[in-house]
Image (tube, rainbow, N blue to C red; front, side, top):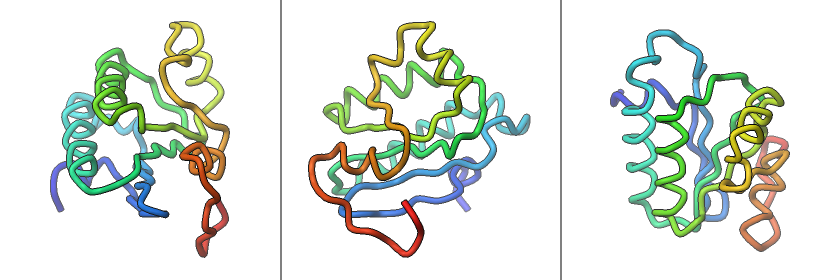
Amino acid sequence: MTNHESLLREVEEINSIYVVRFCDLRDPALHNSKSVLLESALASIAERQSRGIVLDYEDRYFTPSATILTLLARFHRGLDWKLKMCSIHAEVQKHLNRNGLAEMFSIYPNLRAALEGFGDDVATTQQEL
């Protein structure tokens, strides 16, 4: 297991779009190394030929640090704005809204909407999107 795999629960490819799901982002063991692990994970995924990346937060609460948000913004720009987020917990969404960051990111209510945000129909998978 690579270091960044301890942060990721699952990476799934759907129509050449990588969907990233996280382990518990509140885990104290990840607190200090979370941004380094996230950067490593996103860099690894970004190297693959894809149409984009969706970060599926599965409505889990976490504290979005300035370091993490800066990192996500940099990847968002670096991927030519092809980084999308979905299923963000209401409290995290409030934090993004309050700090004016919600407009920077492409945020969708669920995975299906995020995938459709890439501009075409979504092929369904075994699990419900």
